[in-house]
Length: 201
Image (tube, rainbow, N blue to C red; front, top):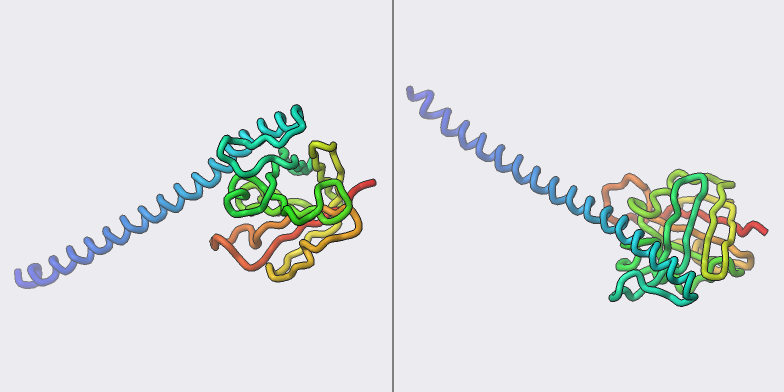
Protein backbone atom coordinates (compact mmCIF):
# COMPACT_ATOMS: atom_id res chain seq x y z
CA UNK A 1 0.00 0.00 0.00
CA UNK A 2 2.77 2.38 0.95
CA UNK A 3 4.60 1.44 -2.24
CA UNK A 4 1.55 2.29 -4.35
CA UNK A 5 0.92 5.60 -2.60
CA UNK A 6 4.53 6.62 -3.10
CA UNK A 7 5.03 5.65 -6.74
CA UNK A 8 1.73 6.26 -8.50
CA UNK A 9 1.41 10.03 -7.84
CA UNK A 10 4.94 10.49 -9.22
CA UNK A 11 4.04 8.44 -12.28
CA UNK A 12 0.87 10.49 -12.71
CA UNK A 13 2.86 13.73 -12.54
CA UNK A 14 5.30 12.34 -15.11
CA UNK A 15 2.46 11.42 -17.47
CA UNK A 16 0.91 14.86 -17.05
CA UNK A 17 4.15 16.56 -17.99
CA UNK A 18 4.63 14.25 -20.93
CA UNK A 19 1.11 14.96 -22.16
CA UNK A 20 1.74 18.69 -21.82
CA UNK A 21 4.96 18.46 -23.82
CA UNK A 22 3.22 16.40 -26.52
CA UNK A 23 0.36 18.91 -26.72
CA UNK A 24 2.78 21.83 -27.00
CA UNK A 25 4.80 20.07 -29.71
CA UNK A 26 1.64 19.20 -31.64
CA UNK A 27 0.44 22.80 -31.38
CA UNK A 28 3.78 24.13 -32.61
CA UNK A 29 3.81 21.64 -35.47
CA UNK A 30 0.27 22.59 -36.46
CA UNK A 31 1.15 26.29 -36.31
CA UNK A 32 4.27 25.77 -38.41
CA UNK A 33 2.35 23.66 -40.91
CA UNK A 34 -0.34 26.33 -41.05
CA UNK A 35 2.27 29.01 -41.67
CA UNK A 36 3.82 26.96 -44.45
CA UNK A 37 0.44 26.17 -45.99
CA UNK A 38 -0.52 29.86 -45.84
CA UNK A 39 2.71 30.92 -47.55
CA UNK A 40 2.21 28.42 -50.37
CA UNK A 41 -1.49 29.26 -50.76
CA UNK A 42 -0.71 32.98 -50.89
CA UNK A 43 1.98 32.38 -53.51
CA UNK A 44 -0.37 30.34 -55.71
CA UNK A 45 -3.33 32.72 -55.49
CA UNK A 46 -1.09 35.73 -56.07
CA UNK A 47 0.27 34.22 -59.28
CA UNK A 48 -3.27 33.79 -60.60
CA UNK A 49 -4.03 37.46 -59.95
CA UNK A 50 -0.69 38.55 -61.37
CA UNK A 51 -1.28 36.47 -64.51
CA UNK A 52 -4.56 38.32 -65.06
CA UNK A 53 -2.95 41.73 -64.58
CA UNK A 54 -0.13 40.68 -66.91
CA UNK A 55 -2.61 40.05 -69.71
CA UNK A 56 -4.13 43.47 -69.04
CA UNK A 57 -0.66 45.00 -69.07
CA UNK A 58 0.05 43.50 -72.50
CA UNK A 59 -3.33 44.59 -73.84
CA UNK A 60 -3.19 48.18 -72.56
CA UNK A 61 0.60 48.67 -72.70
CA UNK A 62 0.36 50.15 -69.20
CA UNK A 63 1.51 48.78 -65.85
CA UNK A 64 -1.51 47.20 -64.16
CA UNK A 65 -1.18 46.34 -60.42
CA UNK A 66 -2.46 42.84 -59.56
CA UNK A 67 -4.68 44.22 -56.77
CA UNK A 68 -5.78 47.79 -55.96
CA UNK A 69 -3.40 48.41 -53.04
CA UNK A 70 -0.34 46.81 -54.66
CA UNK A 71 2.76 48.99 -54.95
CA UNK A 72 4.13 46.77 -57.71
CA UNK A 73 3.09 45.37 -61.07
CA UNK A 74 4.04 42.45 -63.32
CA UNK A 75 7.13 43.16 -65.36
CA UNK A 76 7.81 39.81 -67.03
CA UNK A 77 6.75 36.22 -67.47
CA UNK A 78 9.55 33.72 -66.92
CA UNK A 79 9.28 30.30 -68.48
CA UNK A 80 11.66 27.33 -68.40
CA UNK A 81 10.12 25.01 -71.02
CA UNK A 82 11.84 21.89 -69.67
CA UNK A 83 10.63 22.47 -66.10
CA UNK A 84 6.97 23.34 -65.75
CA UNK A 85 4.62 26.28 -66.01
CA UNK A 86 5.57 29.97 -66.33
CA UNK A 87 6.16 32.29 -63.39
CA UNK A 88 5.09 35.93 -63.33
CA UNK A 89 7.67 38.35 -61.97
CA UNK A 90 7.05 41.69 -60.31
CA UNK A 91 8.80 45.05 -60.33
CA UNK A 92 10.93 45.51 -57.21
CA UNK A 93 12.57 43.07 -54.85
CA UNK A 94 11.42 43.91 -51.32
CA UNK A 95 10.37 41.10 -48.97
CA UNK A 96 6.75 42.20 -49.33
CA UNK A 97 6.94 41.92 -53.12
CA UNK A 98 8.74 38.58 -53.46
CA UNK A 99 6.19 36.94 -51.17
CA UNK A 100 3.89 37.04 -54.21
CA UNK A 101 6.34 36.33 -57.02
CA UNK A 102 9.95 36.73 -58.13
CA UNK A 103 11.08 40.34 -58.02
CA UNK A 104 13.18 42.28 -60.52
CA UNK A 105 16.01 44.36 -59.07
CA UNK A 106 15.16 47.86 -60.24
CA UNK A 107 18.84 48.81 -60.53
CA UNK A 108 19.50 45.93 -62.91
CA UNK A 109 18.97 45.89 -66.67
CA UNK A 110 15.51 45.55 -68.18
CA UNK A 111 14.96 42.00 -69.47
CA UNK A 112 16.13 41.56 -73.04
CA UNK A 113 18.34 44.64 -72.99
CA UNK A 114 22.16 44.75 -72.75
CA UNK A 115 23.36 44.30 -69.18
CA UNK A 116 22.53 42.01 -66.30
CA UNK A 117 18.80 41.55 -65.59
CA UNK A 118 18.46 40.18 -62.05
CA UNK A 119 15.46 38.45 -60.48
CA UNK A 120 15.23 37.17 -56.91
CA UNK A 121 12.69 34.77 -55.45
CA UNK A 122 11.96 32.34 -52.63
CA UNK A 123 13.43 28.85 -52.80
CA UNK A 124 10.31 27.18 -51.34
CA UNK A 125 7.75 28.72 -53.70
CA UNK A 126 8.32 30.39 -57.07
CA UNK A 127 12.04 29.70 -57.43
CA UNK A 128 11.93 26.13 -56.13
CA UNK A 129 12.13 25.21 -59.82
CA UNK A 130 15.75 26.40 -59.93
CA UNK A 131 16.87 23.28 -58.06
CA UNK A 132 16.12 21.19 -61.15
CA UNK A 133 17.56 23.40 -63.91
CA UNK A 134 20.78 22.55 -65.68
CA UNK A 135 23.30 24.28 -67.88
CA UNK A 136 22.09 24.64 -71.48
CA UNK A 137 18.42 24.77 -70.40
CA UNK A 138 16.48 27.55 -72.12
CA UNK A 139 14.62 30.34 -70.34
CA UNK A 140 11.99 32.45 -72.08
CA UNK A 141 11.37 35.93 -70.73
CA UNK A 142 8.30 37.73 -72.01
CA UNK A 143 7.95 41.47 -71.45
CA UNK A 144 5.68 44.11 -72.92
CA UNK A 145 8.36 44.59 -75.60
CA UNK A 146 8.46 40.98 -76.74
CA UNK A 147 10.04 37.66 -75.80
CA UNK A 148 13.75 37.04 -75.23
CA UNK A 149 15.33 33.60 -75.16
CA UNK A 150 18.24 32.89 -72.81
CA UNK A 151 20.41 29.81 -72.38
CA UNK A 152 21.73 28.85 -68.94
CA UNK A 153 25.52 28.92 -68.89
CA UNK A 154 26.20 28.72 -65.17
CA UNK A 155 24.68 27.35 -61.95
CA UNK A 156 26.65 28.32 -58.85
CA UNK A 157 26.43 28.57 -55.06
CA UNK A 158 27.94 31.64 -53.42
CA UNK A 159 27.91 33.57 -50.16
CA UNK A 160 25.37 36.38 -50.04
CA UNK A 161 28.16 38.93 -49.58
CA UNK A 162 29.55 38.27 -53.06
CA UNK A 163 28.30 41.08 -55.27
CA UNK A 164 29.40 39.72 -58.64
CA UNK A 165 26.00 38.13 -59.23
CA UNK A 166 24.26 41.50 -59.47
CA UNK A 167 27.02 43.42 -61.21
CA UNK A 168 26.32 44.76 -64.67
CA UNK A 169 27.53 42.97 -67.79
CA UNK A 170 28.15 44.01 -71.38
CA UNK A 171 26.09 41.19 -72.85
CA UNK A 172 22.37 40.68 -72.29
CA UNK A 173 22.44 38.42 -69.23
CA UNK A 174 19.73 36.95 -67.03
CA UNK A 175 20.48 36.14 -63.39
CA UNK A 176 18.07 34.28 -61.10
CA UNK A 177 18.89 34.17 -57.38
CA UNK A 178 17.37 32.29 -54.46
CA UNK A 179 18.46 31.12 -51.00
CA UNK A 180 20.34 27.85 -50.55
CA UNK A 181 20.12 25.03 -49.50
CA UNK A 182 16.65 24.34 -50.86
CA UNK A 183 15.74 21.96 -48.04
CA UNK A 184 17.02 24.14 -45.18
CA UNK A 185 14.70 24.58 -42.19
CA UNK A 186 16.06 28.09 -41.64
CA UNK A 187 13.95 30.93 -42.97
CA UNK A 188 17.05 32.65 -44.31
CA UNK A 189 20.58 31.46 -45.01
CA UNK A 190 23.81 33.16 -46.02
CA UNK A 191 24.20 31.11 -49.20
CA UNK A 192 22.68 31.88 -52.57
CA UNK A 193 21.86 29.64 -55.52
CA UNK A 194 22.64 31.62 -58.64
CA UNK A 195 21.57 30.74 -62.17
CA UNK A 196 22.96 32.84 -65.01
CA UNK A 197 21.94 32.72 -68.64
CA UNK A 198 23.03 34.49 -71.82
CA UNK A 199 20.71 35.86 -74.47
CA UNK A 200 20.38 33.63 -77.52
CA UNK A 201 20.96 35.74 -80.61
